[in-house]
Length: 162
Image 1 (cartoon, rainbow, N blue to C red):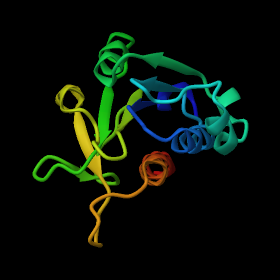
Image 2: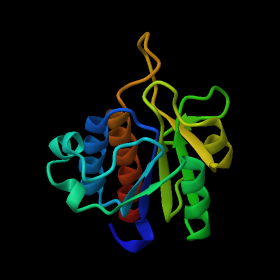
Image 3: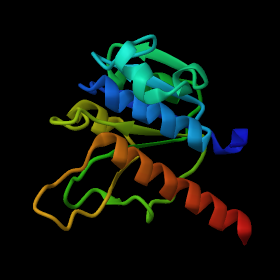
């Protein structure tokens, strides 16, 4: 992805190193600029992460920060214009494909059980979600990352095709 389409991924206290590895693969596939592992999120080098990343952890830069709020503040200071969280918040979140992304951007992905921290949600420009038609109100964080990132990529490509 060209510089104007810069995407950063912020991982907020993800419990599963396997999920983190999966997200590295998705990050590499869409040309993300970096992954920021926050809190106790596994970061390279890590054997479980490496297993599912299949080498993507060596291709996508990673830095670590104490919290996702720190990561969001740091990205703002570095010029990231649009920071969105993936979370279902009635009355606040919109479907991922309806959001008007600007670049550079960051996507914050939250803990598998707790979601994105409330402090970080307050710092974000918007909140995106995926529709949930079943009884569960969430899907695997790696799957959510893939669906949202490809919604972003599709929006980019549709705009560029016009």
